Amino acid sequence: MKVLLVNPNRFQKPPVIPLGLEYLFISLKEKNYEVEILDLCFCDDPLAEIQNLLNKQNYDLIGITIRNVDSVLFYNNEYFLSKIKKIVDITKIFQIPIVLGGIGYSIAPKKILKYLKADFGIIGPGERAIVKLLEDIENRGIKNIDYKLINGWDLGLDRDVVYKRTTNIDYNQYLEEDGIVGFETQKGCKNKCSYCVEANKRLYFKDPKNVIGEIADLVEKGYGHFHLCDSEFNQSLKHCKKFLRELIAWIKREKKERNDFRWALYMVPNTYDEELFALLMKSNAYLITLSVVSDEKEQENTSYNYQDVEKIIQYCNKYEIKIAIDLMVGFPGEKLQSIAKAIQFFRIYKPSSVGINFIFRLYECMQLTEYIFQNEIHASKVYPEISLSSNKELDLLQPHFFRGIKLEAIEKLINKESLFKVEGLQDSVNYQRI
Image 1 (cartoon, rainbow, N blue to C red):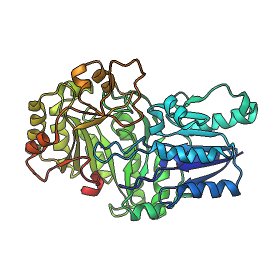
Image 2 (image 1 turned 180 degrees about the vertical axis):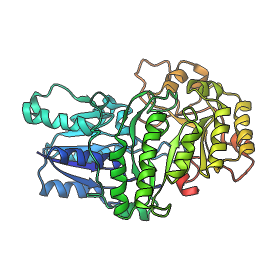
Image 3 (image 1 turned 135 degrees about the vertical axis):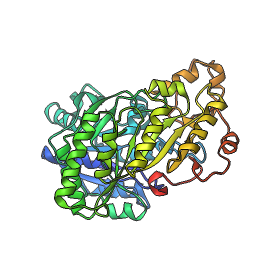
Image 4 (image 1 turned 60 degrees about the vertical axis):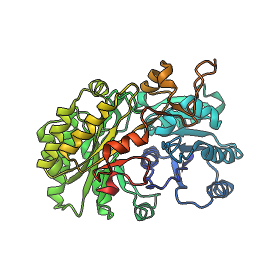
């Protein structure tokens, strides 16, 4: 059977290499399927591109990844689903089954499947799920498949595969536009952050030796700057340290300097010790983005406090790792004093930078969304306005935002200090700033 995997993501601030499609490509190759990737990121006319390809080639299944429903920005939001629908509509002319996937799709799988009028959807990890779908099509025929959705979290990962990449993606084009090469050591997230669409998902850890094999192959191809794509790296100290020791051993064995290989990662302040940071330094980690919230009830929900944040900043200073804070403020009911406390805390402890997010894009799968719409005062701060009196089902595919504090109040608190950046008002991300 022949499969086409499509990346419709054309957002370029910065452009993101479609790592998930690369993993699917290799998983399908391992099972002897014929597979191609159509990357539309830098394409001037994506609709013509896909139509021309389908006029020339026949496929048994088309997979379309959805990284984001929209740009998640309150200011100048860009909605992606309507553009993806045009790609789906053209594809359907050729009567080829379409399967959707990706983190953006998994936010609202039933509603997105219905809106785009595709045939199937994969929730969560797709490496085994897409193989199951193809096997069912082969064995039972497309008309006899009695499901629309496949839960990839139930099927897990292929731990034994070494993902040797770059076969179908022009990395250089991404890097020229300030993109970065990614990799994963795990999928899922155990944390229960109320504002996150990835929260409270089953954890799957990859075999560290195979991840090192993936990295080594990319370094041999000339790529040396990486960003980890795990939701948060430090969810299991055992896994983290095993991976880091394998990585350090490879660095020593291959005599790799920081110019040859360096990497950035995401962390939360709730699973750590000093040894973790010592190992990170030895592994050529140069930047940690630490996710922090100002609301102390939310901190408690994710099992950390300001003392943990202080310790992590101190460890980063000791082991010469830069630290960027991704700070969420303005939770429902949060007082201005709570936000001011967070700002003053970072003034004192001086991380490398603090990016402030004060507006929440709402999705139905988030605990925060449910909490907001249970309270009329909080719900009145949702933009565009949603009427709670109607009997219509809540639909947040179109962008809706909660804004509990105004931009002017944030700007007054940070007082134009260069340490602080208000997210959404500029195009750069952490690895571009530091």
